[in-house]
Image (tube, rainbow, N blue to C red; front, side):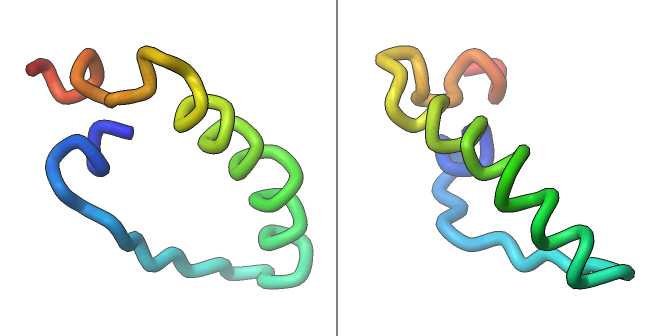
Length: 50
């Protein structure tokens, strides 16, 4: 969210063990990001130190 606050709208990630890691990313990481995006405090300002 701090990256988004700074204007970043794309991050490219790489996975060593693609199949297992992409499944984990989709199941564990993306829901957390979506939750932060939906929250009123999801601006990322607190993370960016603004």
